[in-house]
Image (cartoon, rainbow, N blue to C red):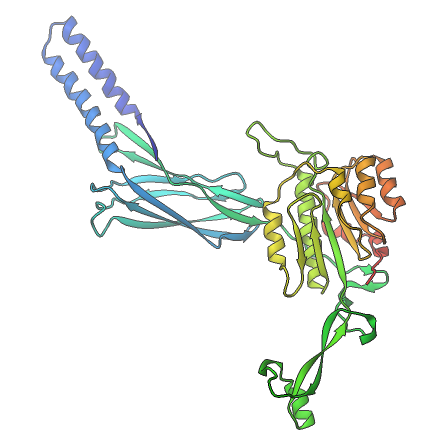
Length: 409
C-alpha cells in the first residue's frame, strides 16, 4: 500500500490564513488572532488524521470474466474490496489503472463500509474493459481518493498488485487457395488405404465382446441386422508448417528506456498473418506445425494435440527477440507446405530461411528487404511476396502467385 496527502485549494487557503493570522497576531499585538490561527491549523490537522484513519488496512481481489478475450471483445473486471481495519472506511473515489491497449471506464465511487469485524466490511464493484491491442496487459493497481468532510485535504491510496488480462491477436478470414492444384477445402477427403500412414476414416465391422459402446455404428447395425462397430481405415493426413520470424531487428523494433519493446506495425502484421494462416489451415483439416525459430512457440495443431486457442494464446504474449541465423538454420526442412512470415532480411538471413523449404513454399517478407535477399529465397524455390504494415492479409493470401504453392502430402 502507498498513500499521499494532498491539500485542496480550500486546504491551502486555510494554511495560508492560519499563517497570516499568526503573523498578524504578533505584528498587530492581537492575541485573539492566535486562536484563529490555531483553529484553522487544527481543522487541517484533524482532516489529515481523518483521511489517514479512513482506509488503513484493506484487501483487494480482482478477477476478469473472461480472462482471455479477442480484440474488441469485452471482459468484465470485478473488484472485491474488504476493509480489514477495526475502523469503518469512508466513501471514496476509486480508479483502476489501465495500460495502453486496454480501454474502459475504470473509475467510480466506493461506498462507506463497516469495520473489519462487522458484516458490512466487504463490497464488490465491476466495470467493463475492451482489449484493442494483443498482449498480456497488466491492469492495476487500484487507487482511492479519500476526501475529508471539510474538503481541505484528500489522500490517495494505492492498493493491490496489477493482474493480467490476455488479448488474443486479430484473425482474418482467408479464402481457399490451391496447393499444387488441390484445394485446401479438400484436405480432409478420405484417401485409399494404400496411400500411407495417416488419419482414420470410419468403416464398420462386426461387434466383439469388450468393444466400447461409443464405437457402435448404428446405421450399419440397422442395415446388417447385427451389432456393428466403427473400425479405422487410413486416410490422407495433410500437414503444413507456419513459420514466424521474431527477430527484433528484422521487425523494426528496439527496446525503450524502460526495457520494453517499442511498438512495431510490421511485427503486429506478422502476428495477425501467422494467426490467420494457422487457424485457416487447421480449420481445413491440416495438421499445422506453428513454429517461431529460435523462439518460444512450437505448436502442433490437431485433434489430440494442441488447439488453435493454445496457439492464439502463445501469439498474444510473444515478443520480438534477437534471433541468430544459426537458430533459424536449426529448424529441419519440410517436404510439406510451408508458409513463412518474415521481417526485413539481409542475404545471410535469407539464406538461413531458404534452407527450411525443400519443396515450394510461400514467403511473406516485410517491405524494405533488398532485392538480393529476395532473390536468395526465390532461388531456393520460395514464392515470395512482400508486405507493408497496412496491407490486407486476406488480399495477399489470395494473390494469384500463392496459387502455385506446392503441397507434398
